[in-house]
Image 1 (tube, one colour):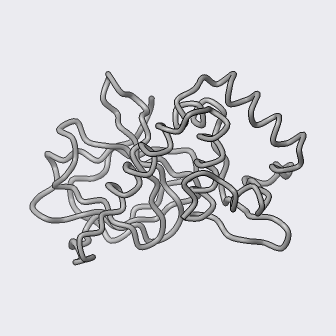
Image 2: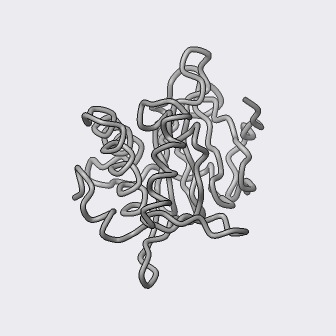
Length: 197
């Protein structure tokens, strides 16, 4: 897995193009500083050898990643859309809410659903409800995930996730517009998902 390193000196704006990752090393960060997403959507994942690539959270505008709560090997931020974040933000009092902890909890809940179909539907609903929007007859996600990444998120193989996605496309519940980095999903499919809030 390749990534670039975040500069040790805090900066007001770090830009990361889609598909690139940045390693956040906790040993180079001090005190109660954090990263704050200014724009875009990023995936937070573990770079550790044993769990390489394991998704911990997704962050969007306004979300913070506290640098004093990272694993000793750090975490990586992967830009799912063009991302801009600041590394000089101060931790804001958000009444105990932590975006990374909340995402990790929700992803863990999805992994405990009975079937891969339920897990996929719950994952897509979570992503749309948190990071997407309703656009006419469809719900839209501003990014795509690989079938391998979806498999990792729902605890299945890439082959299983490909088969399940093909079923959704055939049933006209999921549409992948050619030439666009987006996914479109049926609102009924999203609303009927297990664990839907």
